[in-house]
Length: 150
Image (cartoon, rainbow, N blue to C red; front, side, top):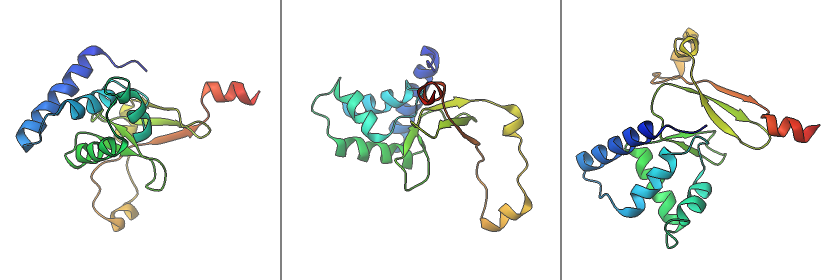
């Protein structure tokens, strides 16, 4: 999924505003790490962000990538996807949306649904804690993996 230039610009502007408001230094590395996620529709994990960012900043370290991603997460600039024991993927799309995830290769893409945005959770969920957000993750097999299986 190709992210529109206007959406990337909005994400970058929001990133810069939050960083300034929170007193976070806008370093070249942080900007490029966030830009990589903001322009990506595949919700990259930290290793993918590292490989892609390293093309522009050869001296960036994997440790810097991880520290920056968790800093961005702590300040609400990205969300993590996936179970905590899996490799986390990072998403700069903070708008209400849902995910399709291929169980074979990990291909992950956004999709939007007004019906799913309004999903009613069972009352029993309240016993677990206070609900802050709901998102649906649809798991399946992507077209490429379906073709490979054939």
